[in-house]
Amino acid sequence: MRVPGRVVLTEAALASLLALVAHEVPGVVGMAPAGLRDQVGRILRRQEAGEGVVVRPDPQSPGRYQVDLYVVLAYGTRVPALAEALGERLAYAARHLGGVELSQVRVHVVGVRCG
Image (cartoon, rainbow, N blue to C red; front, side):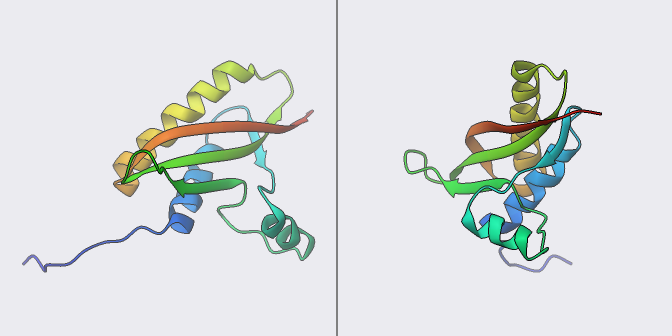
């Protein structure tokens, strides 16, 4: 039996989904606070699944989203290859798991970790 209805994916839920996907990409060792809210949360030792991901609607393409991803990489990781892999995986996950399209993924490398 099919029940009529509508599913709405919030930007926060999409950010959490994309952060989890980003952690699975080899070379990504962590996420960095994307803004003041994330920084305060980290100081208070409250870490959210969507930390390091900012999702906003694309004003030029209604129904699509822009994503800013703030990552910490493992030393020796090739940044261009990692950025490409992240963009592909996030677009795939957004489309197939979240049912939304991404118009742009911007990867901000904010740190490198050894070991």
